[in-house]
Length: 267
Picture: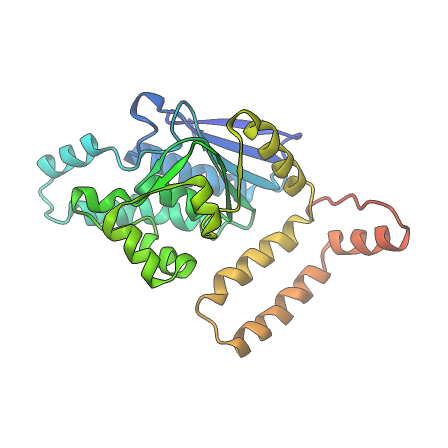
């Protein structure tokens, strides 16, 4: 696919792929084309055996300012379908969310500036989120009379509890990246001038770890939201067997016995 809304960087001999939202003049606001490109990028990385870590960030001063309102308003004027916004959520937002959440590779958000509305959720649905000190997150949907989408109503209560999720969704309050970390909403915060180097260290580490074990861990975590304890314990047994059959497990055991650093291949 030819990408016009996002910019792709390949690093570490193709093990790491980074997608940059590349519409800085609109603070990387989301439109149908960009949503489709993010989904396709995630799907391509999922299928590519060389890729072992995926990241998403933004060009310019913002990570993502949410839905492009000009496009949304134009859709409403042109469409005969009275449920046009629902169709956009179903056809564009939901497939992107699933492509990230269900991806077999680790997906990491590098939030380099404001993350607002659907842009905040784009960062938060990733497996974990790293942010600059100057970044902030806002569930700004309420400011224009909308509800949190991009899986906001699914993840926010689970990550924060009903009280705090409701407070942030009802008020649209801005959370600094430091506050977001303190609440367990994101994983880590780095000084702006150190962000590229520090985040790069994390990405390099993840890119060289046993990818299939990480993918199975991710899959198990996702299932835990709906499973009973007994169901989850059974699932752990299944996935542990799957992990034990990988080449990386065998390499990890060999390296332990030989008292050396393992060289994982992601297989």
